[in-house]
Structure formats: structure tokens, C-alpha cells
Image 1 (spheres, rainbow, N blue to C red):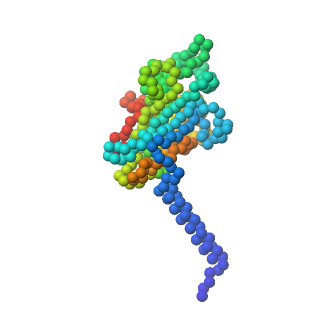
Image 2 (cartoon, rainbow, N blue to C red):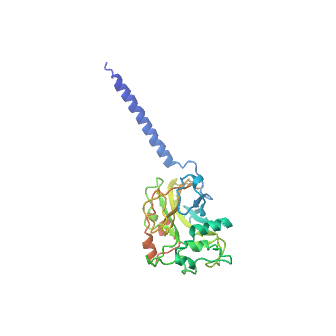
Image 3 (cartoon, rainbow, N blue to C red):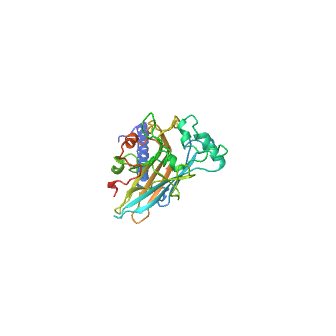
Length: 310
């Protein structure tokens, strides 16, 4: 009877163990894709994050992060479309800390005394203190220049790059393959509203800015589905400030990314949708043609729902 040499037996044993581990690893990855672990109800889910200037990597040591300039929160609300399929409504709210120390910090960080046009958007009180500017007006793109918004046309670039915008793209569960509905026409908005106020002007003190609501189609048809939503908050002009070295190298126009949120979602037949939201370091740029979008007179600053989102 033929007997395997001892070293062959050891080799065979090692190969069998490696194959088992490989198969187990593949099965684990498959399970991760087939099942959204540690998730909670999508409806009412929220993700808080801070905005620093210049931006900071959220993976940095929080003890040395310093004071944030703004606080942000992304909230989700589940919808059911007319055809019975699942949708999610996304809303981003930005809040400015508003104590006296915060006003002094804001003034110190963002006064930009070297820019002559800043005198057009500053308001000074009797004690020569720079008053709070209207936060939604500081962020928005649309509206009459210096009347309904602070932003204006850059004299060097001859375009308006003084605004904050949200861009949303939808992907498969791996985050690699983008859905057709956002690949060619992603959801984008540079419009911000005052919270609970209908009539404000350039110098109304408003500390809270709300984005447009975004509607993203998830799925349905009584079939379990998984996917990922990527949300970028960008500012179109960094005024010479630099993003973290860990940020994507591609600039978002003359600006960059202020914050990045990922949403893993799952639809389960007969049950509410589930999701996990994370404030993360952006691994990639938005890939959006900001200049073309802004230079096109017909491009909307407001969010839109794609025609093929049903």
C-alpha cells in the first residue's frame, strides 16, 4: 500500500485548513452583504457630525480636534411611493453655536480682513463688534447677490463659487457600482432655508440652516434589497485653506469636502427599512462637474428627484 510521505501529509493538512478558512471568509463576506448587522430603523435615524475650518479628519484624535465651527445632522424619514415601493427622505441641518465666545471664535476664524469685499457682508454694532451673519445666506447659491445671499461672482474666475452644496449618489451594497438614477444625474442642491422663518434679510441673525429635502428611491416589490447612499457636503471655495492630507486629491472646484456621510440601507418584505449611518473620511471625490453645473444658466440650485426614480 502506498503511504504519503510525512511532509506531504503536513502540506495537505495545511492546504485543507487554508481552503476551509478561505471558504469561511468568503461566507462571512457574503453574509455581510446579505445581512445588514447592527442596523436600526431607517425612519427617524440620525447622524451627527461637526464641521471644522479648515476641515478635520473624523478619525483624528477628538481630544486634539479643537472647537468646531458648525454642528451638522443628517436625518432620515421613510416614505412609501405611490407604487408601494420604499423611499427615503434625507434632510441636512447645520447649526451654529451661538454664545458670545462662539461669536468671537467665528469672527476670529472667518473675518478675512484681507478681502476688501468682506466689508459688504459684515455688520458692526455700536461697540464695533462683528455681528452674526445670516447662516443660510452664507451657504446658499441661488438668489439676488448681496440681497438674498452673501455669495457673488468671483472677479478672477467670473463664476459664483461662494456657496455650500450637498450631493447624493446611490450605489449597490458594496459601494462600488452606482445606480443609473444618480450616475448621470445625481441629487444636488445649494439651497438653504432658515429654520421656522419665512422672511429674513441679509443681516437677520439666523443660526440654523436647513437643506432641501432629498428623496431617494430604495426598492420594494416584496423583495429584500441592500444598497448604499453617499452624501457629500462641499464648499466651493476654500479661500486658500487646505483639506486634510487624507482627503481625496481631487478638488471640488476651488474648494473641497466639509463632511461625508455613508448610509447602508436594507429593505425587508413586511418590515420597516433598516439603515446604518456613519460620518466618515471621504475616500473619493464627488466626481461632479461643479463648474459646468454652475455655468449652465438652466441648472437648478435646488434638489430634484430624477424622472426614473419611481
